[in-house]
Length: 151
Image 1: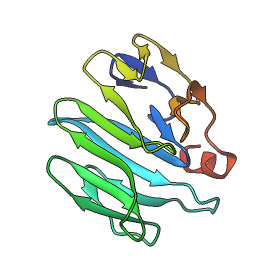
Image 2: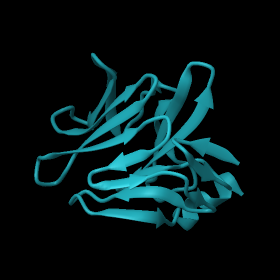
Image 3: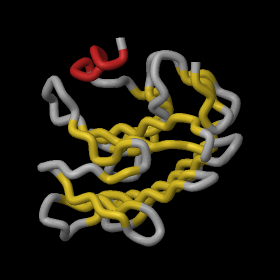
Image 4: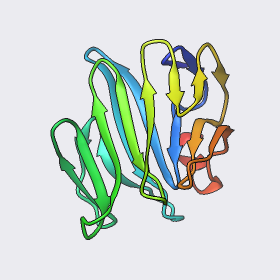
C-alpha cells in the first residue's frame, strides 16, 4: 500500500489520469517522484517522464522547462501538460477549449479543480481522472491493456 497526499492506494499508485496518460506518484527521500506513461492501446506503454526525468519518445515532445517539465504534442506546437515537482506536485493540463486545469498534490490532499480528496482509499482504480473537456471523475478504471503491468 502506498500513501499519496493523504490517500491510500492499494494495487498501484496511480492517483491521476488525463485522457490516456497515467501519472504514477511514488514517495522518495526528496519528496515525490512522478512517472507518466501514455497508453496507446498496445502491450507496452510509452513513458514521457520517468522518476521526474523527461524521456524521449515518438509520441510527444518532452523538455525540461523552468519550472518543471513541459509536454507538448509531437510537433511541439500544442501544450498537453506542464509538471512541477518539489515538496508538492502541480500539474497544469491544457484542455480542449485551450484553458488550463490544475491538479495539486500536497502533503495531505489532492485538489483537482473544485474536487478535494483526503483520507480516501483506492483499491485497483485510478484516483482522479481529468477528461480533456475538463470533467473530473473519481475512482477511474485502468484500461485492461495495462492491468498486466500491475498484476
